[in-house]
Amino acid sequence: MTELKSYAADPAASLGRLHDEPAPSTRNHFQRDRDRIIHSSAFRRLEYKTQVFVNHEGDLFRTRLTHSLEVAQIGRAIARNLGLHEDLIEAIALAHDLGHTPFGHAGQDALNDCMREHGGFEHNLQSLRVVDHLEQRYAEFDGLNLTFEVREGILKHCSLSNAKMLGNVGERFIQKTQPSLEAQVANLADEIAYNNHDVDDGLRSGLITLDQLAEVRVFAEHLAVVREKYPTLAGRRLIHETVRRMIHTLVVDLCEQTNLNIAQHQPDTIDDIRHLPPLIAFSASMQAQQLELKRFLRTNLYQHYRVNRMTSKAKRIIRELFGAFINDAGLLPPEYQPITRPDKARAIADYIAGMTDRYAIREYQRVFSII
Image 1: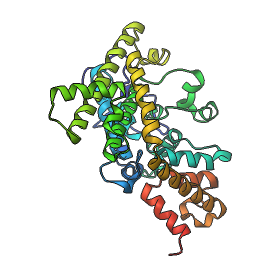
Image 2 (image 1 turned 30 degrees about the vertical axis):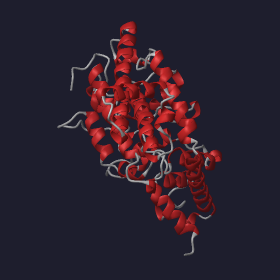
Image 3 (image 1 turned 180 degrees about the horizontal axis):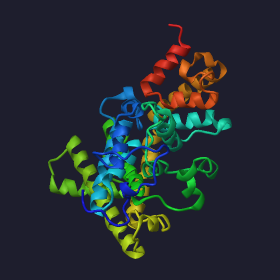
Image 4 (image 1 turned 45 degrees about the vertical axis):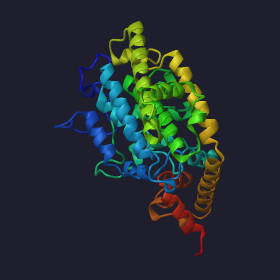
C-alpha cells in the first residue's frame, strides 16, 4: 500500500462499531471488515444475482458478484494513486450491493412498490440492514458489526426520515456533510464499472451494436484509436481493447481532477473532508461524456424490448410472491414467519431481497404451480 495522505481514513482512528470488540491482532479494522463481508452468506448469493440480464440467460454476463469484484479492483487502483486507504475502499465495494434484490433494478422497483405502505424498499438501506442485522454468523451480535467507515460508504443515499433512525451513520444526510474520500471513490468506481461493463455485456448479447456505440463520443474516440493501432483486430478482442481503454481514461481523469480539487481546498484531516464539497470527481468534459453514455445505455439497452420483457416477468414474480406471503404468512419459511419476525411486511421484504434470481423463479413455481 502507498503512503497514506493525512486526510485518508485511518483504521486505528475508526469511529467504531455498533458492538465493542477487541482490536484485531493480525490485520487492521478495515481488513477485518473486508474478510467478514467475503465470508458472509449475502456475498455468496451475489453470484446468482444479475445486473441487466437474468442469471439463466448466459454464463458470461456480469453478476452482482463479478461487478462487486470489478468495483473493488477499480477502487483500489484509484486509492493507490490518491494515497487513500485501499482496504476501506475494497470493503465498501464488496458490500455495496449486498442488499440488492433478484432481477436487478426491476426487482428493487417492484419490491419498493409492494412496500410503499410499509416504509418502502431501497437497496442501499437494505445493504446496511444486511450487515447490521440480517447476517447471523457471530455468537455475540447480529450482523457483521462493521466499522462506521464501511457502513457510511455502503449508505450512498438516504432520505431524511430514514437517516433520523440510523444513528451516527445517518447524521451526514441531516447535517449535509460528506463521507470519507474512500466512500466517494467507491461510489464513482461503481459508476465506472457498471457503465463500461454494461457496454461489454450489451454488445455480447447483441442488444446493442458497435455502429450504435460509434455515435457515443467516449466509446467512439477509443474505438477509433484501437482500430488505427490494430487495423486487423475484430470481434471480442476489439471490444475488450476498447472498453479497457475507456476504463483507464476514466480512472486517469478522475485522479487528475481529484488532485486539482484537493489542491484547491487543501484538506488536512478526514474531518476537513467531511465539511468540504465532494472532492472525488471527473472533469466537466468527462462527466458530460459519462452522462451521454448513461443516456445511451438507458435508451438502447435498459429499455430494449427484450430487456423489458424480462423486466415485466421479474416484476410479476416479485409482486405475486409478496402478495402471496402477505396474505398467508404460513407460506413463509419458519424464520421469516410473524411468530419470530413481528414486522411481517419487512420480514417478507428481507426474504425476497435475499433471493437469487434462480431461487426466486423456483420459489414462484413452488408457490403457484401445481405440477
